[in-house]
Image (tube, rainbow, N blue to C red; front, side, top):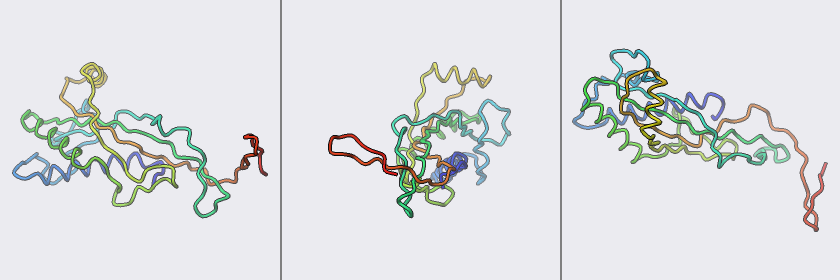
Length: 201
């Protein structure tokens, strides 16, 4: 499932989880009226629809340095074939309440923080298992607050050319993007007694 569409799938799943958590909050009306699109995926600096309650914006992609430089992965069906390891990505989002009522905005932030504190990982996207990228990744994704400094936030809102709003950063890792190259036969290295190796055809 970790093809090139995984970034979009993760974004939609993250929004679905936030929407479900807000809808299920007892005795609190966040103004969603059962419409998931009221959590927009547009930048909070855009001219948003008046019905928008919050923005969930993917603003940065980064390679997870701890998962780089993996060895080729043996194919599970044909062990003499090897796959390229997936590209390990981490996604950074900005969740921004955009309503006029600051009390509701702060309730939104608190509920989203609470949800990902209670449920910091997930294994399904769009109702399908994420999978382990042919053995090259974890079958679960982790979500945690990505608390930005005031300076970083000021720079971001300056880039949006919009007035500053209190926002919550969210980090999702590790999102594996599978290679599109089919498995191929690689030459193996056989270790010799002296610690050196020779290439086996």
